[in-house]
Length: 93
Image (cartoon, rainbow, N blue to C red; front, side, top):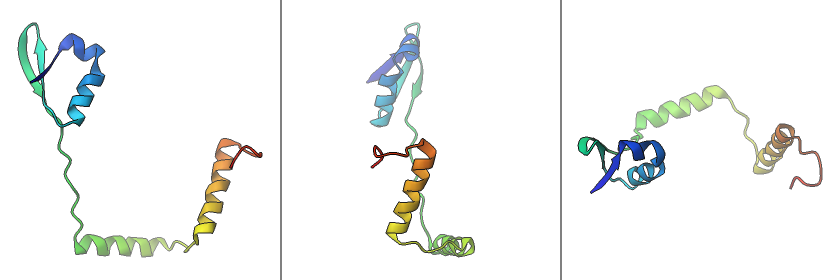
């Protein structure tokens, strides 16, 4: 069983995070007494229904976005990156 003391909690949080990411529960100990349990939060999957898909299509239609080819999207992305990072030279590839 995993456990962590309150002192370790302050200095060794990476161990706690790793255990929680692996789905393990960790007991919290304070002055040689178990005072609680830290349990990882379960992710709930979002369920796509016909209604939600239709709603997404309706919203996308309202946005009236232009259809761009892959080359056009790539060109716009490169322009934005150059402007954002001030990379106007041969180094940007």
